[in-house]
Length: 544
Image: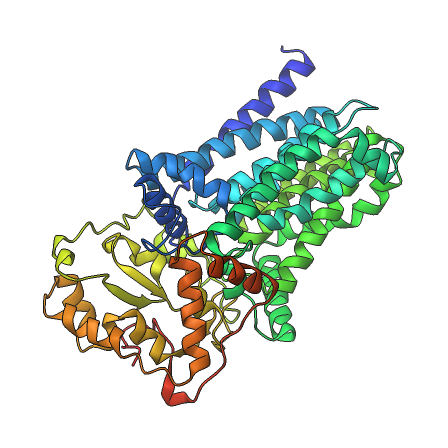
């Protein structure tokens, strides 16, 4: 027989391999991921980090992930690379979880508990290989916790600080998850704030260079430091947004009750762990606090339309906290109650596996969807339709649509006007027409803007003619652009400003002054009469 320690390691390795295999079997690409892929394609093609050629708009929230996707774009295997990158991050996450388990002495029971709460939770499993950045965020957040746990007494958590900065470069809101860990790492050695900064100055210096360096670049290159999606996904009435966020969390709790219960246990155990004399427990308390803040933030911003996506990282952290709390509970750690602990694990594994077989209809009452089950549920889709040589006959071919994530592959030269405003700064600032779908608000867009951009869908059969390369379409689109018929000088001025920000020379003094203006203020587009606006991108309808 194997010694107990060796048996634990072999069993842990076997469970991690099984989790990786399960993740590989779930491999897919989400349509939203193709937005980042188009940025990666254009960067690899020498066009810059842009969605529409010649138009600088930060329509992504995951700069580090997008830059990594560009590696696959160089070799023209973007979607397969995205899946492979997700699997690499998953393998790294599993290794980190095994290391955390050893440091916290969770044993086989503890690692099985964490893996059961996460990798048997359908959304967590989905977004490890969705082409989105979730797998990298999970890896970096878990690695930050491990680095903090591994920091010797009296030393600064420099590695944890740098990893937290990398997590921020993957998603800025990951700061909510990692900052309390770093605060706890300083607190447990009794450092005062000034002493903590002095001890860890190297880590904070590197983190500052990474995060502030990117935001400075974004401000100069794109015109404002925050992603354009911030403006596109905010602006709805706060009460209504919080209601959407509560429904988003409730949707997860009802459909993934076992994992939600584990998260609740982790939250409930956080105060008790902070009162512990064990250093690792107090670090976990900081991690639990960060996960709680992250959930509150998800509620505050209105959740999302993809089932469970933004709850994956908090779930991961809270599962670790819950495993530690239950593993050290007097009611479950004695000789006699040990069987209760294994019964608890068995119940978690069975119920989590059972509930992960369920999925939602495409549009449920909360308008939250199970993307993989409802849209694909099979092999990796091919979003690329290919390059259309006939487009050479039409200058700057432009189409409006709200499903740009699925339709971007028609041709990289097509300029998309995004009806949700994710990659369009003018649309992102227009008044909201429909705030029912979290993060994807349809806007009331001035018709003059669509004409100024030369939207082919304003013309009869314009989309079909554009994709067919009809040479007679070019002069008609030119006439639209020449006579947009702006209803007010204010709207025309705002259009000219945003065109200068996104298309003008980077160091133009007038543009530099606009960067300050748009950084300090949202600069919302005023509303218009119904006859002068459109809700661009509605399927099967021309914006006009």
